[in-house]
Image 1 (cartoon, rainbow, N blue to C red):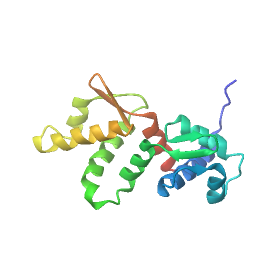
Image 2 (cartoon, rainbow, N blue to C red; image 1 turned 90 degrees about the vertical axis):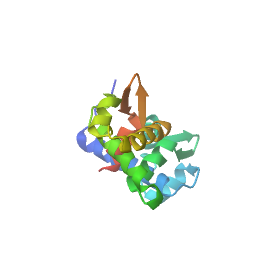
Image 3 (tube, helix red, strand yellow; image 1 turned 60 degrees about the vertical axis):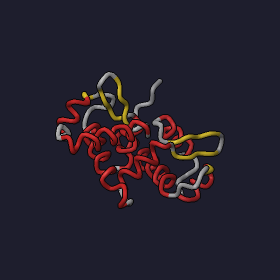
Length: 166
Protein backbone atom coordinates (compact mmCIF):
# COMPACT_ATOMS: atom_id res chain seq x y z
CA UNK A 1 0.00 0.00 0.00
CA UNK A 2 1.29 3.46 -0.91
CA UNK A 3 2.40 5.44 2.12
CA UNK A 4 0.83 8.90 2.47
CA UNK A 5 3.29 11.58 3.54
CA UNK A 6 2.38 14.61 5.58
CA UNK A 7 3.45 18.01 4.22
CA UNK A 8 5.88 18.31 7.14
CA UNK A 9 7.43 14.92 6.38
CA UNK A 10 7.67 15.77 2.66
CA UNK A 11 9.45 19.01 3.50
CA UNK A 12 11.80 17.13 5.85
CA UNK A 13 12.57 14.65 3.07
CA UNK A 14 13.14 17.49 0.60
CA UNK A 15 15.52 19.22 3.01
CA UNK A 16 17.60 16.06 3.43
CA UNK A 17 17.52 15.44 -0.33
CA UNK A 18 18.63 19.05 -0.85
CA UNK A 19 21.47 18.75 1.65
CA UNK A 20 22.76 15.61 -0.05
CA UNK A 21 22.38 17.01 -3.55
CA UNK A 22 23.93 20.34 -2.56
CA UNK A 23 26.93 18.57 -1.09
CA UNK A 24 27.46 16.40 -4.15
CA UNK A 25 27.15 19.17 -6.73
CA UNK A 26 29.17 21.70 -4.71
CA UNK A 27 32.04 19.30 -4.06
CA UNK A 28 32.18 17.33 -7.28
CA UNK A 29 34.44 14.66 -5.87
CA UNK A 30 33.33 11.40 -7.42
CA UNK A 31 32.16 8.99 -6.21
CA UNK A 32 30.93 9.53 -2.67
CA UNK A 33 30.23 6.74 -0.21
CA UNK A 34 27.15 6.76 1.98
CA UNK A 35 29.41 7.03 5.05
CA UNK A 36 31.14 10.12 3.61
CA UNK A 37 27.78 11.76 2.94
CA UNK A 38 26.60 10.97 6.46
CA UNK A 39 29.82 12.38 7.90
CA UNK A 40 29.52 15.60 5.90
CA UNK A 41 25.87 16.42 6.51
CA UNK A 42 25.49 14.81 9.93
CA UNK A 43 22.18 13.10 9.14
CA UNK A 44 21.19 9.81 10.69
CA UNK A 45 22.29 6.90 8.54
CA UNK A 46 18.71 5.56 8.37
CA UNK A 47 17.65 8.61 6.36
CA UNK A 48 20.48 8.57 3.83
CA UNK A 49 19.55 5.45 1.76
CA UNK A 50 15.91 6.51 1.21
CA UNK A 51 17.08 10.01 0.23
CA UNK A 52 19.59 8.53 -2.21
CA UNK A 53 16.82 6.37 -3.66
CA UNK A 54 14.51 9.40 -4.10
CA UNK A 55 17.26 11.39 -5.82
CA UNK A 56 18.19 8.43 -8.02
CA UNK A 57 14.56 7.97 -9.08
CA UNK A 58 14.33 11.69 -9.89
CA UNK A 59 17.33 11.39 -12.21
CA UNK A 60 19.59 13.56 -10.05
CA UNK A 61 22.00 10.90 -8.74
CA UNK A 62 23.61 7.73 -9.99
CA UNK A 63 23.94 5.13 -7.26
CA UNK A 64 25.54 1.72 -7.14
CA UNK A 65 26.29 -0.31 -4.04
CA UNK A 66 27.65 2.16 -1.46
CA UNK A 67 28.60 4.83 -3.99
CA UNK A 68 26.77 7.84 -5.45
CA UNK A 69 27.53 10.76 -7.73
CA UNK A 70 25.39 13.52 -9.21
CA UNK A 71 24.04 13.12 -12.73
CA UNK A 72 24.91 15.51 -15.52
CA UNK A 73 21.39 16.98 -15.15
CA UNK A 74 22.02 17.81 -11.47
CA UNK A 75 25.44 19.34 -12.12
CA UNK A 76 24.19 21.36 -15.08
CA UNK A 77 21.12 22.63 -13.22
CA UNK A 78 23.36 23.68 -10.34
CA UNK A 79 25.69 25.52 -12.74
CA UNK A 80 22.77 27.32 -14.36
CA UNK A 81 21.26 28.38 -11.03
CA UNK A 82 24.57 29.42 -9.44
CA UNK A 83 25.79 31.29 -12.53
CA UNK A 84 29.24 32.02 -11.13
CA UNK A 85 31.02 31.77 -14.49
CA UNK A 86 31.17 35.22 -16.11
CA UNK A 87 31.95 33.68 -19.52
CA UNK A 88 28.69 31.70 -19.47
CA UNK A 89 26.39 34.20 -17.77
CA UNK A 90 24.39 35.10 -20.90
CA UNK A 91 23.93 31.42 -21.76
CA UNK A 92 22.87 30.67 -18.20
CA UNK A 93 20.45 33.59 -18.25
CA UNK A 94 18.65 32.11 -21.28
CA UNK A 95 18.67 28.61 -19.78
CA UNK A 96 17.40 29.89 -16.43
CA UNK A 97 14.62 31.87 -18.12
CA UNK A 98 13.51 28.87 -20.19
CA UNK A 99 13.54 26.58 -17.15
CA UNK A 100 11.61 29.16 -15.12
CA UNK A 101 8.90 29.36 -17.79
CA UNK A 102 8.68 25.58 -18.16
CA UNK A 103 8.67 24.96 -14.40
CA UNK A 104 5.66 27.23 -13.96
CA UNK A 105 3.67 24.63 -15.90
CA UNK A 106 2.47 21.36 -14.41
CA UNK A 107 5.13 18.64 -14.42
CA UNK A 108 5.03 16.79 -17.71
CA UNK A 109 2.95 19.51 -19.35
CA UNK A 110 4.57 20.77 -22.48
CA UNK A 111 4.33 24.00 -24.36
CA UNK A 112 4.86 24.43 -28.06
CA UNK A 113 8.29 25.69 -28.98
CA UNK A 114 6.58 28.46 -30.97
CA UNK A 115 4.67 29.66 -27.92
CA UNK A 116 7.80 29.41 -25.78
CA UNK A 117 9.71 31.49 -28.31
CA UNK A 118 6.87 34.02 -28.42
CA UNK A 119 6.94 34.31 -24.62
CA UNK A 120 10.69 34.88 -24.84
CA UNK A 121 10.18 37.31 -27.72
CA UNK A 122 12.54 35.20 -29.78
CA UNK A 123 10.85 36.17 -33.01
CA UNK A 124 13.44 38.93 -33.15
CA UNK A 125 16.24 37.33 -35.16
CA UNK A 126 18.81 38.50 -32.60
CA UNK A 127 17.19 36.26 -29.96
CA UNK A 128 16.50 33.23 -32.15
CA UNK A 129 19.93 31.64 -31.96
CA UNK A 130 20.44 32.04 -28.17
CA UNK A 131 17.04 30.41 -27.51
CA UNK A 132 17.74 27.57 -29.95
CA UNK A 133 21.15 26.99 -28.37
CA UNK A 134 19.77 27.15 -24.81
CA UNK A 135 17.07 24.60 -25.64
CA UNK A 136 19.66 22.27 -27.16
CA UNK A 137 21.93 22.57 -24.10
CA UNK A 138 19.03 21.97 -21.71
CA UNK A 139 17.87 18.95 -23.69
CA UNK A 140 21.41 17.55 -23.82
CA UNK A 141 21.69 17.89 -20.05
CA UNK A 142 18.39 16.08 -19.48
CA UNK A 143 16.61 19.14 -18.10
CA UNK A 144 14.05 19.53 -20.89
CA UNK A 145 12.40 17.07 -23.20
CA UNK A 146 11.36 17.91 -26.75
CA UNK A 147 8.91 15.95 -28.84
CA UNK A 148 6.59 16.83 -31.70
CA UNK A 149 7.24 20.55 -31.45
CA UNK A 150 6.55 20.53 -27.71
CA UNK A 151 9.06 21.25 -24.94
CA UNK A 152 8.69 20.44 -21.23
CA UNK A 153 10.82 20.44 -18.11
CA UNK A 154 11.92 16.96 -17.09
CA UNK A 155 11.22 15.38 -13.72
CA UNK A 156 14.89 15.91 -12.83
CA UNK A 157 14.61 19.67 -13.44
CA UNK A 158 11.36 19.87 -11.49
CA UNK A 159 12.72 17.91 -8.51
CA UNK A 160 15.97 19.92 -8.47
CA UNK A 161 13.95 23.14 -8.43
CA UNK A 162 11.65 21.83 -5.71
CA UNK A 163 14.32 20.70 -3.28
CA UNK A 164 16.79 23.52 -3.86
CA UNK A 165 14.17 26.24 -3.39
CA UNK A 166 13.35 25.29 0.21
